[in-house]
Image (cartoon, rainbow, N blue to C red; front, side, top):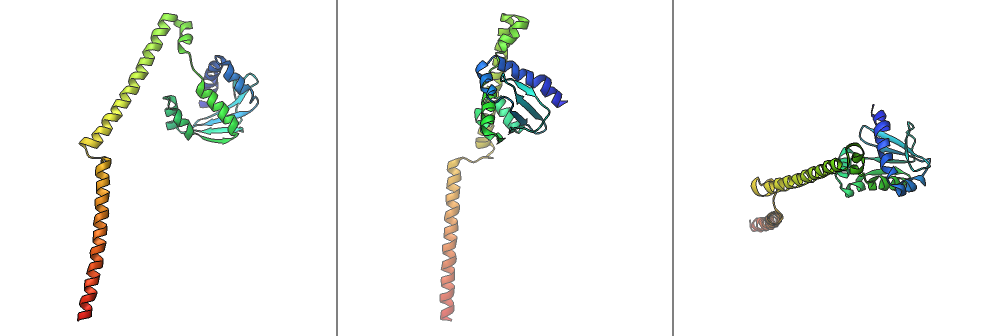
Length: 198
């Protein structure tokens, strides 16, 4: 079922985005005939590149380059975290993988233009505006919630100690250790002196 979903939804969606980006298709067309596998935890997407720089769904798992992603990395990428791409494990033809990966990451969906075909310009503009505001609100909500949790962990619960008290604690522990070692040597010296007098 997931393979059918890839063939019927994902590949046409990516091709739709590629159709709006001729330079991206030109870059992919230079790798015509090559195959790429995008491996998620339980899902594998096998694609081939055609002469026009479009993607074709293929059943063959024999590929020239492979991307291995976990769902967390995929979620970070979807939320716009470009640094997450450095955590993708790539095997095979690294130049092909870099060209395909960078091209797909740079694709930009003009949602407003696509929606305008079905509901008109004004309605499409409002829907996209609402969606952008919702995404912006969600991101700011997540960020402020994270800050509140960090503040709670630092200030209220004491679960996380601040740097300065932690450094002082480490220094104090080192001092106690050194003092204990000196005291042990002093006791050994006094014990040996006492034994020599007896």
